[in-house]
Image (tube, rainbow, N blue to C red; front, side, top):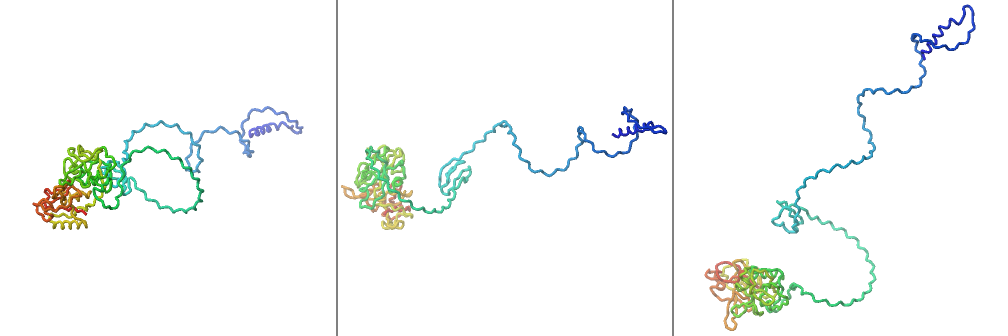
Length: 469
């Protein structure tokens, strides 16, 4: 724009002299048409700075220049607020399963032994049990018992609720019509032997005449039960207050209970003929229990279970000892017959044979068991005690009876009949000369698990006394 103004100024300067005549005035003619633009003149000197013109229209933006070099990073600004949770991305594809690891060694499981009042013996690792004494379950770790669990404490009792009011009495229903009686069923099989009833009040009949059968034991036992007292203890464990029957006693019971197929052990009986004759065939109230030591009777007084020895047994046909070998376990035939004879016990003190005579030995029994006296043999066995005698025996009197049909008397250590009484015969071999000597050349009677004997029981050896009431 400045260049166009300058050019127009130059044109005016050159045209001015030709527009007027010298000395005269002329009329200015009309401006002719614009001539063609002449050639570019030489650029004149720069004119003074013109005034700033008005702001021109902004031209289009030029193309973006190249990016300048990056400036130095400014300091980190404060953290902005938490942004909104983005939309979860699509789940990736599951990776390939890894190779299975090697199986571990199987652990040991608990072996439950049950409930015991004390730790079981010889436990193995992981054996477990419940101790009923302290209320704790234990497990064995191969060295000692470790606590597995304890019983919890009982909770406090809750408060009783208020009793509700009594409901209204309902209207009684109409009684139903009695049904017709059904047809009688067929008889059932006989039931098992019932338990013995409680002992009745004391009566006036004792011993074999009042014989009572208690039953056959359910347990089976061989011929070695530590003597007559051991067999009595077996019966007492199943029928309280009972003892092993002897043959006559059992037969006098007139029992209707069938005998077991194996047969049932029963003690031999002895007669009162004066010779201690054994019997397995007669049920007589004068007969008593036999304690004769024999290979063929009572399994050697119930102290042996050898097959070469035999004992008496109740069978379906009869009472017999033939072929009833002592090594075969069988039930026992048990009686609860009331006997007047009562065994008190063995004295806690041992004495030699010189005890001041019969009165003195009875006095010594009374010191341990008031009201008691020394037993004689038949009395001791008729008491049917369950107490085992001391290993070396206990002092006891012999028994004696009258010889039937022949006159005179006899002594015995093998028959426990009610017809027998105490023998006070003075002898080198009986009763330590009626309990007045402790000389070792004299001997006295003692009761052992096997039988009553005086052989080798020298009067100088202290022993307890067998006492009866």
